[in-house]
Length: 182
Image (cartoon, rainbow, N blue to C red; front, top):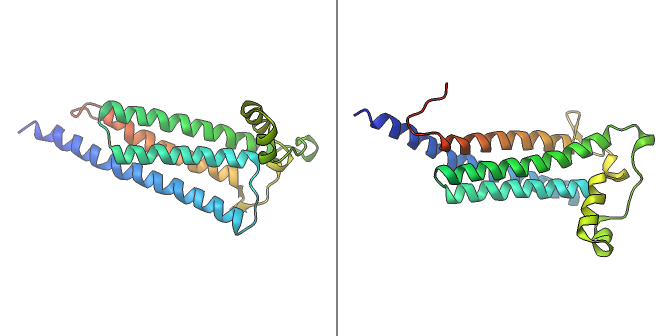
């Protein structure tokens, strides 16, 4: 009779993980959908740092989707939590860089560079990544805000929320079935 309690707790914990991972995927897909809407319908061309933020959100979404579909047990869930953390930290680093550039005084913003497609055509990928992460003039322009926050600020907030939910729910699978949070 006493073994039923820990089993019920483990089942409830596992039952919550799959929906949270799939909802995380859906939210990442919605973020990318809005980014594409902003690009093609609102005619807001993404800067190179915006493209890397999209790659980060797509990475988060892929990890969420795989975790939701596979629904691994203990160690596998921990691996997905780690992958979510890595993808989130990379996305936050790029968003943070763009937020920094957007808050520089106009005379300190780096000059605009070549478009990403041109850089990829004529430069090695490592050089392109290095150049893009340094940012350029178009990365410092704020051409969209919602309630006073720019797009990279929203990306950072959404990434923090998604990562917190995903990491928390996946790390809970590592706790033994009978343990309680204290």
